[in-house]
Image 1 (spheres, rainbow, N blue to C red):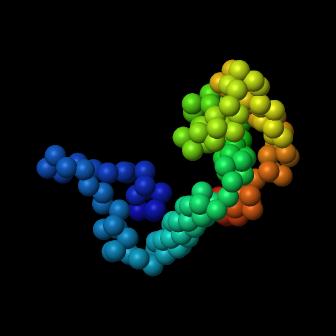
Image 2 (cartoon, rainbow, N blue to C red; image 1 turned 90 degrees about the horizontal axis):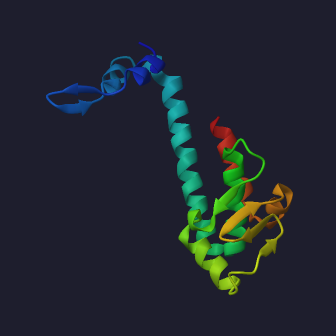
Length: 148
């Protein structure tokens, strides 16, 4: 049984409870699964590093920088070249920052890389978002590409 077979088999049901037999096969023949285990460990460590970087970013950078980085991550995961989001879809801290920064809600907001009008945020220029984003964005983006 290969690592792909184990993952494809998924959890089984025993006595009404879900269980996974993947650990048993790995323990029985660890040398066969060594490359898979190293890859899985590396991916988990990379994800933990990303979480730590996001946490640092949330505490030490301006909301404008965090919004630019958040939008860039959204663009990276979307097949489209621009995003159109309801402001209500943004994380709460970014919603609050936008509403406090721009007290007149009827007024359209035009910032480098995005605009906000009628409760919708539209990305306009990825290059301008990159210029606004903090250095954490590049660190996290590079660790994302290392996972693939």
